[in-house]
Length: 126
Image (cartoon, rainbow, N blue to C red; front, top):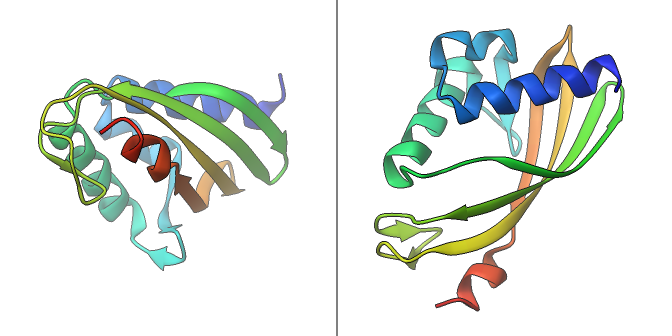
């Protein structure tokens, strides 16, 4: 595995263990998400909100490709959001879906994230 792949799998482990104090080891201070600068604090807040809304959230890497400074990943989710998710009334139902996400790393940390969640897969389960 390449060094960037190792960093990325460490990042996913950090998310899955909700190790927020160590998130800064993986995410840069000026991080952007889908073209919007949210910084490390905003990134952490976004993730904490995800876990509040989806207590059983777990990031599962299905596909991982590293071509420095970029990482492309297909993440698989099997979870039960408590209420609304992506403007859909999930209300505690179990759903599965994927996210295709691209990351740009700078100095070993995530600088940019571009994410697309397969909302149609969720809608098909409702």
